[in-house]
Length: 224
Image (cartoon, rainbow, N blue to C red; front, side, top):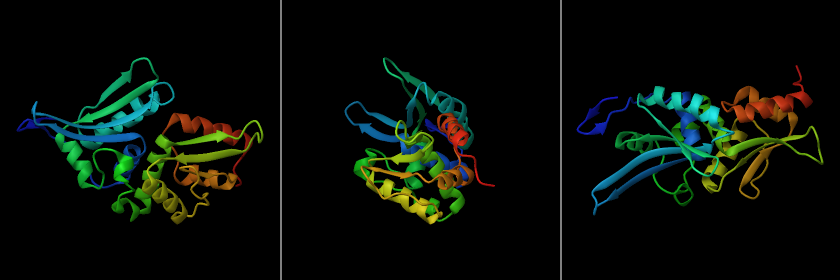
């Protein structure tokens, strides 16, 4: 994408399911930085999404990277963290940061900012399902309750942003899911029928969760 007045131009996407999913990803494992150092006259504008360089590699490189580039028409960066299994997908530029702030996100510490799901997403069930997919794909997990209950699985979402956690629970309830109360900064779905419903109506774009869903299906075939 070209530059104008030294600003990286971006394509402004319509509010749709793809953008809603990407917003969910940022709310889950993302961070927005908007800083200016007056002494050095240096500004930092970036959107960064964190992940595990082993478990989330395919998801970040083969799904989130092209998703972001198609949405905004800009190149993204992939950075692996030395000495640990961490990696980042990075979008840089003042325009991309200001775009996300304009649609309801905030720069800085998400927990202190107490950011929830933007209202424009809550108003459209298609957008809401897509946003929840992004949230669960980043800050959620599906796991078997071994060794005590083999074959019994739990879909879990954990986040320390109280408003986001509450919004996520309320959104699932509004979409007709039976979900637990908030306990220890997390919510979960345990009933087999509800997990089937989640993957049918919301789904996943992350290989890590899709593999676990296949394990779940080995024990729990859907009722036709």
